[in-house]
Length: 188
Length: 213
Image (cartoon, rainbow over all chains, first blue to last red; front, side, top):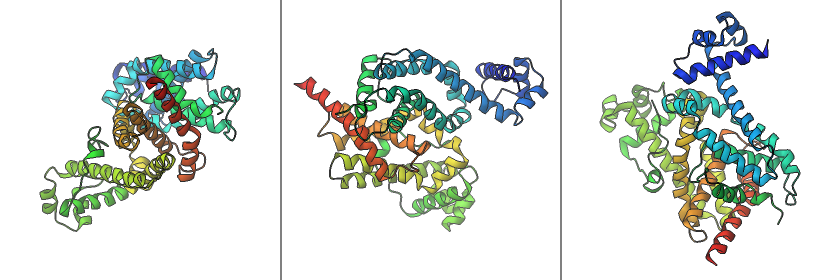
């Protein structure tokens, strides 16, 4: 299997979903957009349309988190990284037109798949944070993995939903990071 | 068919719903049917049979049929959930116990709910859209309004409300994605509260004190 072909199919499918939504994207549309035959598409996604749609949701989600990781990789410390990351992710979600369109018209086709993905996303964020948390001094008895798991869950929760916080305001986000995310990670 | 988990922030938390008589029996019967066949496949006939009443009786209690019945089931279960939570939280002797009770009870109620468990497993499209993105904001607002009165004597209303949101985020995260230890039981919840919530609340309180000083 050729990764480039797989990526081309997913890019093509994503373009179709962006244009006409999930339920109106057929295998033929996706194949045409990607410039591959139906047979090729089936070779890469033997489960057909369901597998393809699931894969494109995961693909776009990972792309989102790659952009996020890139945006914060040069942050000087953990606090700044979390502030920048939450502000960036919030804006990216707000401006994600395709996401809003599918959430508006066919949430039942996208949210369950994203929910299924949440364990992997927590692991992904956790893996990204662990070395940075390991570089700080934690309170006695608090394990690095435990701290990273907690912060990763909270970060994902805030990306999905800001609640009453204004996540476009970095002063508020700093207050949030200092209390809900990092207060427990600072030695007394 | 959609199942609205909450009507409007504040509503389910404050006004408790008490169904009686034929309506209460039909709601209980519906829960048993959903736990067995799921929400989409449960019919009015199934519910009537399970409740040992006639179709006509069921329609007198719920003239809107299955849709109205399902709305009543959700409303009554949300109300019951908050009542259990309130009872456990009232038993708590201090802030730590209160937060541990809130988290572990909420997770246990969701995980032990047979009808909801069936839906999470087999009809996830009826559940998860209600706890993500803007719908999650509504759930968080409900949790905030529910928790606020318990914390109002130590924190400003804004902060007290945020603790409610915070607890709800932890509960939802651990229901969607159970912790490595298996489940968010009282012991895991206590560790989480001691490690992260109490220090965070301390931080909020010292900010509050610095502002008012």
